[in-house]
Image (cartoon, rainbow, N blue to C red; front, side, top):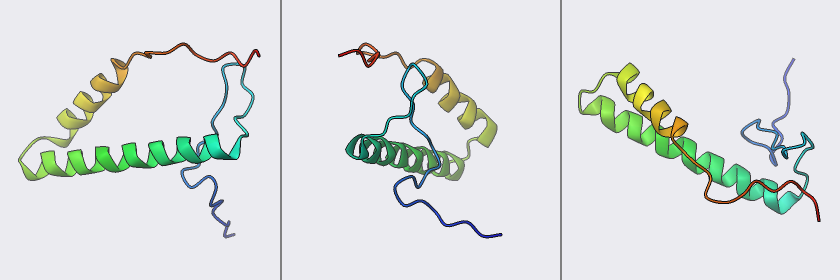
Length: 82
């Protein structure tokens, strides 16, 4: 059975707040999806470059994971309280 791709959610990610509620603002979701898509493309390009230069795929993915694990927020998480 074929499913139609939701063009507002091309990556299949449901963006949620700290309390588990869904981020519903259309503009926010557009920005989040755009950032996610750009990040995925950058990772793909970097992996392809590394493989073309002779690196082991597992090593590169491990390095990417280490970088992701080291990311720290520079702003506070918004708890949604106004």
